[in-house]
Image (tube, rainbow, N blue to C red; front, side, top):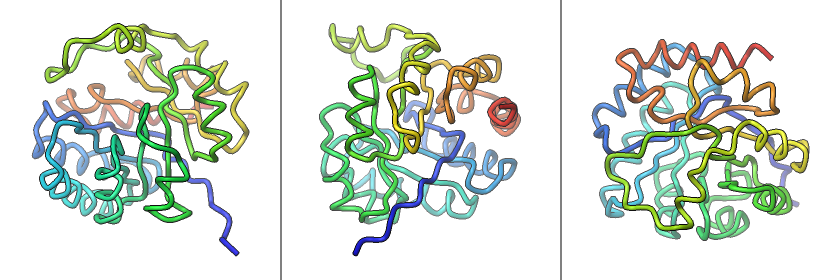
Length: 231
């Protein structure tokens, strides 16, 4: 009989952006890992353009750094090869975007206790994630965000998904999510806005530039984490 999964929920996730460079990302993770509680911090490696051999090398590097910091580590599983990279480097799990396969398919590769989060651009995505027994949904975009330097021109669907949904999207997601499904806010989150996300029902937040673009990422992360703990 398969052992029951134990829900695990880092309250602050850093989603990587390749435009900042590998070395800067690693230094940032090291600095943040030194100031946050072990288990409170997670890193999602997101780089959909990198060739798989290079992705595997950088994932291995981030796995070492996150393990030293006691942080969770997930790979953006945008296709089957990326999920296998997560398995090969010993990642805690994967994040699945639209069309990236099911939660069951990811756990068939990674194991039944692997962390799996799912992108949620609407309540139907939240309900589907709950039905598939995902660990978390990343509800986005909550606030407006600046375009990434490497981003392709948006098509109509992508442009629609980038329209800020506001904290009401978090209230709606929490209302239709099962209690064990973590609701994580993504999109324009800062230390100034994190409290409103928590008040609306978010269990945690995921950020990119709020930490990566900060000259003091450790202080930025601690300020956001302080807001998350004032529940």
